Length: 439
Image (tube, rainbow, N blue to C red; front, side):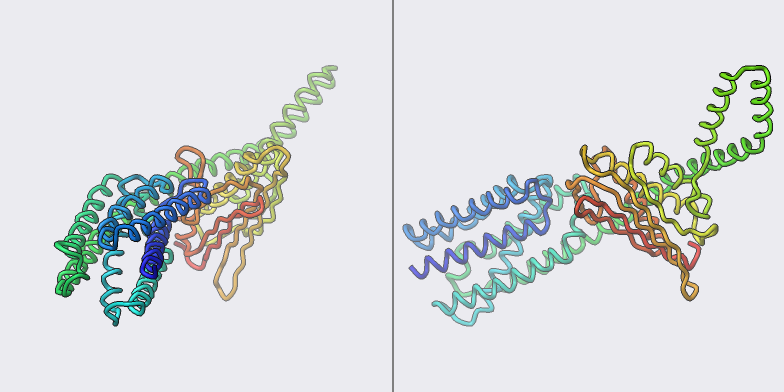
């Protein structure tokens, strides 16, 4: 009975490791909590059935069933929880198996006792420590890098998955053929060590090469997004400059408008004079810019989005302290402000009826010991269903997300930082730029 209990505990330990390993790397289907509960229930039921087989038919049959049982559980976990493509999920599965086999063998090798209760306890403790180290590394360091590769790579995953699968077959043959290694004198350690050296070497070479490709791709993508955004905002700046010039021309021509109105009134054309005055008033209001800040380009784009927000019934507050001259490209500044403000307005428009819709903008520029800092904080009301991935909100628009990436790239250009958060119905965009040097 004690053996059955220990085997059950070992099985549950393995099941927990499998689940946590998958959870550390895969993208989850929603609703997450429900899927985790279903998976956990299935694993517990299978653990009970496995122990029943062990109790009724003996240890040897139970040991031969462990591999198909583990594969079956992993496939169920993939179908229930993973939102990734099958090639990616299978790569995670076989990599997990490869590490599991190595950890199991190493735990057995490091156990000082040959058998009995002390052996079982030492073996379980060794596995716990090694499992914990792998999972900590996955959650802390590996996941963001792995998810970046998932976003970039396509059919390449099929070849990478085949490499993981072939290595798994090799390890199974080394450890379990013709008999399980623990039933005979252990003369296989050099084969295991050599194979894992090859395993880690191949993985390192594959992912180093892929990372180089990804970095090159991301560099091109960054340049493409920035160029696209810059072209758009250059056009917006030109449009605002034309609006300013038009407003100035209208003010210059104000005397002519007065003469026209006086002529209409003198001729008794009162209705025509009223219509003419209304048209000129509306035109002037449309071209007029709010005095938001001293910086011309920032003032123009903030005025534009302030008008759009208020036209949509969004309460808008702006506190902007931006000097007339900044040591940065005005197109980059306009891109950050326009993308942030546009995202804020769109977030408000997606709010359900009855929710307060607001956008608050706070911008401050400060200089200390010759070091300039521009701080931008934009808050807006939002729905509570915003999903984040790698620190970026996932856009629901087809092809969306370029705006937030553009903000991040611009902040990176000025050695700054950007942060997107959503809490209690408020979405916040925080940007900090270091403007000590012209980039």
